[in-house]
Image (cartoon, rainbow, N blue to C red; front, top):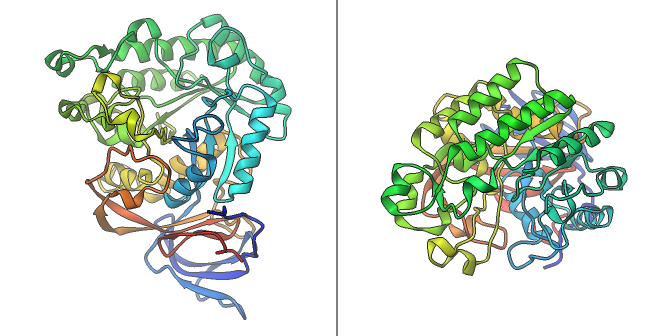
Length: 444
């Protein structure tokens, strides 16, 4: 398939009529070129295309701060093109690509290659994340400054998949990125406390005879790193926070003005360790699915602002990496296509968040943390036309046809989820139109 390209054709002038702006007041949105030209009621423009979005929730295009696109090196799992398609289908207009590729994204050359591939794909803005250490080995700092000065303009650095466990390396990284307003995104996992771990440590792991991944392995690293961030005066971001204790530490740190932000994944907002009883490797993930108490705690943490954002940790794998015995299976779940629907079920339909809050935690704040220009902006005149129109009134079983990436390892297959992304606009151009993902030639 030939990729959709942002320069293929013109966005033109379109009026999206009757949207609920961030779930609130109803208004028409007039998109002209790649910008929002007007917002109001009863809009008209000679020659404009009119699209009925009556009752749909209009959100600024979603931004994912934690996506694994696998290219270069692991194209059997995902490519930048297929991952971009999955993102657009889920309502995303920008994703941050994690560096665990081959070669690792630890140089200016690799991150610029990823940026170029994202531009060619055209479905979303692909913003590379640089590795903190060379080869993600935790031994010496990568070329942080060179990546920051490159055309990719990297501002987020992470060894995700591996913890920066050496406190001196972590301190040096935090000090280094201050010069260009960067942020270190930590995968909080003490490697010594999680050797051989297969699932959350607790009564269920003991019953199943699987080695446990204790909550303290996450919490101890977060506690150390918020103190380092306070000492250095640098920005820290905590990836995929998953335990009640971690929420408490972040809340403590924020009360003291420490510059820390944190994310939670959709699956940690909804799924629990009880799903491991079936030994279905779709539910094997790092950090692992936790207890009911942890799910309730991270939901409350997101609702009260302790946790800043929702990030998917979209982690595609080929079938053979998941269709095997539990102990041998890879960690990870795909999540771009399902994230907004899961957040609706876990947070909006339960009354914990309003749609304006969803705009904040899934678009505005992720863009701010990543210093990504042109995304997460208000739905207002003159702003970039990066938009998502979501229908919260429907529900359907999530199936393989909903997956638009290369891998099938979704934990939601066969599960009913609310909502449906109906339109996604990137640079004013529909990448999803009336629920259908754009194919080659759509922009011509």
